[in-house]
Amino acid sequence: MNKVPIYIVLFLLSSISTLASPTMYKTWIGEHLETLEMKEGAGHFYGSNPLNRFGASYKNDTLTITNNTFSTPYDYTFKVLRLTKDTLIVSPLNANARGLIDNKNKFVFVDKAHLYKAKLKFQKVFFSATSCYGGCPGMKIEIDSSGLVHFLAEKNVRAHYGLYEGQLSSEQLKELIEILKGSELDRLPTEFEGATDAPTYNFKFYYNGKSKSSRGFFFPRFNSPLLSYLLSIYLDIEFEKMDGVYEFEK
Image (cartoon, rainbow, N blue to C red; front, top):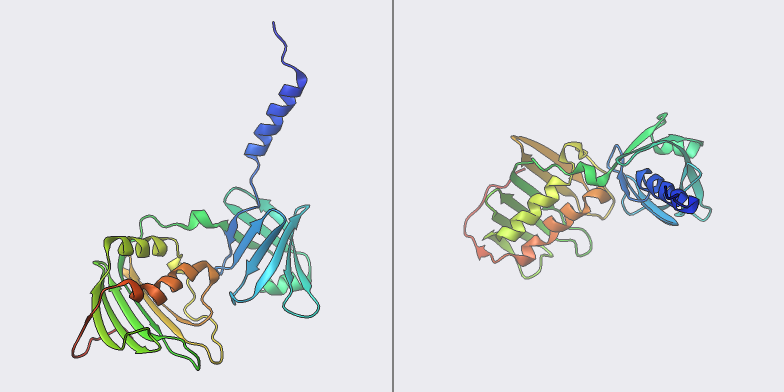
């Protein structure tokens, strides 16, 4: 009987262990759509204000989020209680960490890839944006399940002013639906933070026989593909100018 060299056995066992071990290094989404982007050597955390990007690192079952927005950085330190391929559960180790998660004893993140809702049935979306003291576009746009678009350009909207009607291509409509399926619409906050001299965004989504409204400025980073699509898709649509009025959502 041939004997297998011990170093081959150890290598195979090591390989199996590596394959079986869940990895920390992926994108995790928190209970309030916080985003934790973990990479080897460095990562980032985005909370309720997506403009505040904090550093993130992982070592010895400890997750450290570092706020560098002030002259003296400070850390939010968490103990990793559980790590599986789709779930990360952490517990605060200092006062900063407890404050970050509203004084909870633990906080749950989920693998971003597991939040995709394949069965979401899109019916309609309404989006409006107010202008600001700068060049923020003031606009309204409504898209239904057939891809029919009604668009009102109010201010700072490139080469457009007034009311328009157009049609999404099949690819544009497919892109919107794919973005919506990955947007966790049920968990969108009704109100999110605003800011002085910033536009206000209003959303109303119709899907799966129900509706969801959200309003504010600091839209979660997790949902940035959705915001980007709705702010810019009018640039790629062939519109016809409309006379009269169209009754948008309020």
